[in-house]
Image 1 (cartoon, rainbow, N blue to C red):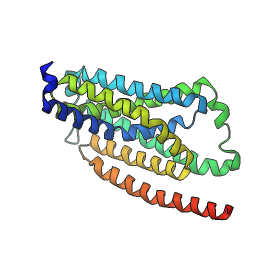
Image 2 (image 1 turned 180 degrees about the vertical axis):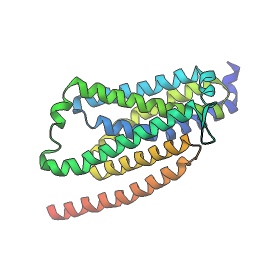
Image 3 (image 1 turned 60 degrees about the vertical axis):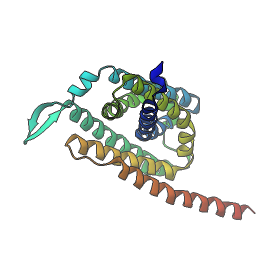
Image 4 (image 1 turned 90 degrees about the vertical axis):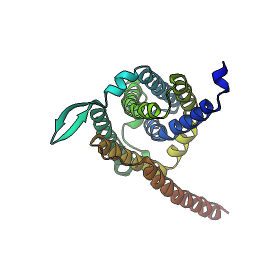
Length: 249
């Protein structure tokens, strides 16, 4: 138990947990967007299953470190560029995220306008079935694998002790589980924020696709752009609420 008194261990745990939470922001947003398509009674269950799958995926990858590290080795070469298993996973995940986010933007903007005030035709009827529920869980599972792979590779580069990695992953998923519901409700309540979140996922999809071709895009740039956009939108929301209060008084 003496190793628990090592301050370096706790510093590594705190840094890795914070990093895992930051890296999980895009995961939370993706889950929030998809869960918003479900009836309210199914949303909490879908969040728990989605984040539970994310934790299980990360832990399985952590206990398969030799396989994960092997994914970085080139499998073949295209136009002089080495392609590894990790590159293929990131490319497929990036393209899936681009498609899904673009489709959701269309549904949120174009289809909703065509449907009128009653919403998107068929959305509620289909959403009440088990097919949509497990379809949402399946999509969350797919993107969880992509995000988990990147997260685990980052963890391996920061910490040597597998126990610290496991503790950081479990703690970060616990934090995300608590944060997912209020974030999801806020995004679902404000359509303009939802479109911004989808635009952020488009940027993440582009970054993943670029990463597959060894073109690294620092996530700090994406988060800074998103934070700035959310700051502007927060001012717009405040302005709209103020106008509504004045109109009602």
